[in-house]
Length: 199
Ligand code: T5A
Image (cartoon, rainbow, N blue to C red; front, side):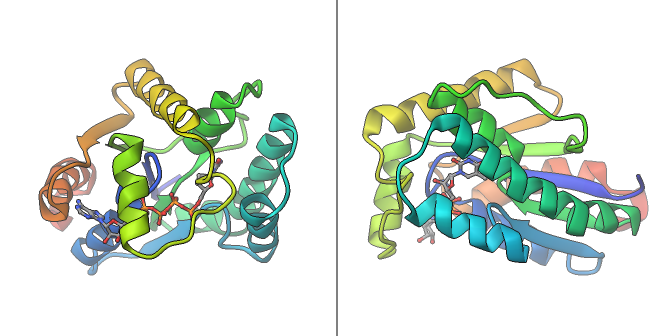
């Protein structure tokens, strides 16, 4: 596959959307497609509503709903974009399921049909920092953000475990620093993945 899949992960409000926009700006002269999860397809948007604003559900039902929305996004958007040679930037991907639904006790796994990212940036932050940033930005907490601190701590621990298990795929960046400093760390790594002429 000629394209490049780069994903951003981290706890609530760690700055993924902010960093995605800064990265998109740096890559402005290249074919870039940006998606977020859950969502970015008609089915994904409907499932997002159920997942973030619906009722409590069984952890494995939750996992498969996230994965179903992801399968649609992969088939409809991500694989075609990678085939065209695009750089695909993704705000959350399967590591979110491994971390969040893993923290709920679901038996998580990585399906063979889900492409592995060339790079996964983990914005590492105390989950309370992100939740505070979201409150300051006036964002009302959704069903998952409203979980107790202990759940968010388990999610953060799952992320640390995932990053330690695959140090080549993950770039771990401390999110508790100015957005420009975070962006610089990410760019250092992303620019090395690009063909020489594009750096
Ligand atoms: N989920 C998702 C699962 O449980 N399983 C899954 O498989 C998937 C895919 C998604 C929810 O679903 C869960 C995880 C989530 O709970 P969402 O609404 O998409 O929900 O929420 P998030 O992905 O958490 O996205 P947010 O937009 O809330 O957070 P971001 O993108 O991490 O943060 P961002 O960039 O919006 O920044 C938040 C605020 O902080 C400021 C920004 O200006 C903004 O106000 N900020 C900074 N402030 C100071 N210093 C910095 N370095 C800053 N960077 C950003």
